[in-house]
Amino acid sequence: MQLDLINTPTVQCIVWRDELLANVYVDDAKWLRGKLDELDDSIGYVKANTWLRHHIERYQLLNKISFLRPTVARNAERIAKTVNQFAAMEWLRSVVSRMSWCDKLITGLDGKELAAWAEKRSRDFEVQIIEASLQFDAEKAHKLMRLELNEIGYEFDGWDEPERIVGLAARMITPEWWIRLAKKQWTTVENILRECGEVHRKASPYVSYWTLNKFRKQRDDNRAFLESMEAINDLDQRFTLAELSDKGVSNPVNRRNELMVRLRGCEELADEMEHVAVFLTATCPSKYHPVHNSGQRNGKFFRAGCPTVRDANAYMVNTFAQFRSYCKRHGIMFYGMRAVEPHHGGTPHWHLLLFINPSQRDALVDAFTEYFMREDRYEKGAEKHRVTIKDIDKDQGSAVGYIAKYIAKNVDGEYIDGDIETNKSGKEAAERITAWARRHRIRQFQFVGGVSVTVWRELRRLKIDNAPASCINIYHAANRADWKQFMNLMGGPFAGRNQTLKTHYVENEENQYGEITKSIKGVQTLVDVVTTRLYEWTVQRKGSDLLKSGEAVSSWTRVNNCTEVLKPRRGSGKTEVLKPVKPEYFGVPEDRLRAFAAHALNPDPTPEVAHGFSY
Image (cartoon, helix red, strand yellow):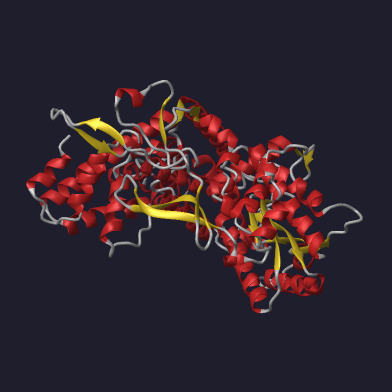
């Protein structure tokens, strides 16, 4: 009889268990109840309750994760077996912390649903910030902003600068700011999936299937948007945004062709100057790689705190910066290009094609090797795999031909039969690498040394009728895509800040948040400015003819400058100049933003200012 009392849970015990299991996923709760029944019979309900106390946190944490729960649960179980239970719980807590704002309402939503969520979030914040400002003071409004930013994990360092606070607040009342913030959380999801072993050649190389599907849908949505919008200049010339996009370097074919043209020019100039080409590859230390080549987990990665892709790339950036500083101090001059691509597990590695005077080749190689071997120098395989050097032999082929496959693989996969790293086709590998670069915000290509490509692109905007007389030779070199001659005329590959032409900016334009911004207007010499932005463009929905109707239209500064539009004042019979809002901020009237900015800068608002917030 006494044994039955020990094995049978009391009423208080059942209530206590029910309260704990209420915060557990339904399937987990069902399994836990069955486990407790077994323990009650075998060891008694008191010891069963002790077991539940030790294990309930894991299931409560998993309940806070939405669609990642099964994947995270499996990885936590694996960590518990291979390391220990404490390490598994620490990792699980970190996942829940990172996912605290990135819940299913953000990761699961897309398209119109995400836009509706962002609209509601921005409206709710606007109502709260206005109420705090009107009923209390600016400090109360600032405190509300701090709480909101802390909740979503957004870092802001301008609390001592009123204009920056106003600019941030104006952004936070726009749905597009929340959409961009939500999409940044998708990177958090991808990092967690990578930690769970979902990214490698035997599962999903470079990126997870979840991110790849997100990338494909976003790409299709972006294309549909570009095709639905058109840009009109002051000569009434019309182009869809898709047509304009296809003309620029956002088009993969144009991007690949420009990279090849510039590299070819560098190589031709190197031949002329009798410089040699060196191809260098640098890889991150082992702790930045979540998996080995076999696909098995790498214990060093977990012990290092699971570095993200951006952590790994930051290591490469910082190390390369130290290397460049050393070369500058010792007069080692080089130029060329670096390309960043992922290993199958998502960790970036760098390829560099550098041109240099033969007398400095050994010094460059020694310095490069030294800096990229400093961290974890003596780990297994470091000497063999961390840094590789290959001198380009002109008799066996050109330097550009050697790196062409890396460019194609990382842009559109053209002319690539297959990817050795993953056994995927060239096209599929390129798609996954592009998804990887965009999800983790990695700059894939960058030229080092050389001259300004912005000047090159600005000059190529001009037709021959508008060719600048003051720099006609440079214009012709750019117009005929002669990068070698363009570099020579600009001052050579080591011109640096002393280039013949520089980009000309103006800083008298105000964006939709009331902030003064600078924009490109052309190029300049020491005494002259050549204007390359000759037309004023506005953007509207295709076929809407807003310009003819007199309604406000949206400017797109990537096409060109804002166009002032005359709009009748309501009820006055007069007209006022209304500066349009960028297309990514449709639905947010500028007067609403300006009224908010004026109020935020004025802790004691007048009724006239407060009236600007009426809906």
